[in-house]
Image (cartoon, rainbow, N blue to C red; front, side, top):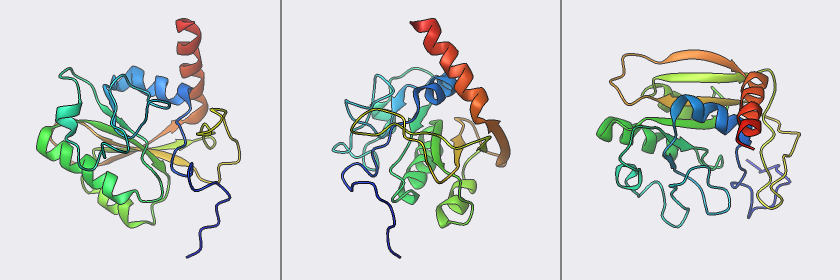
Length: 181
């Protein structure tokens, strides 16, 4: 399969989550670790860099010993290992994780995710405008919708499917930004 993306290879997997989305979700989940970040785009005080390799680093060791979830907006070029890592950290260490992914139920990693996750929230009402890794500016024209895959830090009984409206998250996050200014 040919990659049809026009995005430069060096930034293809480095898009940042819109701050309004992150802040709205952080109000619910109290994120304590960004599991795929660098000093320029980390959304949490504690983060795991590409060099540290979140797939090999223990989230339990990297995460502060306070209640809260791990935030993970993984590189979309190879999602499955990140889904497996979140499932393993959840099963082995009862670590909660919220993962932002493209909304695609036809891929193998989706089946893997729903076999271990507690919840999937499809983001409805529009697509996210991620921030460009080079400029830090929102880029419109995202050709895919997104979803949140959530592992809670308690025993799993089933996987729930829900929706959340993008604009509701954006407005709530924007209010949090205004309040902090």
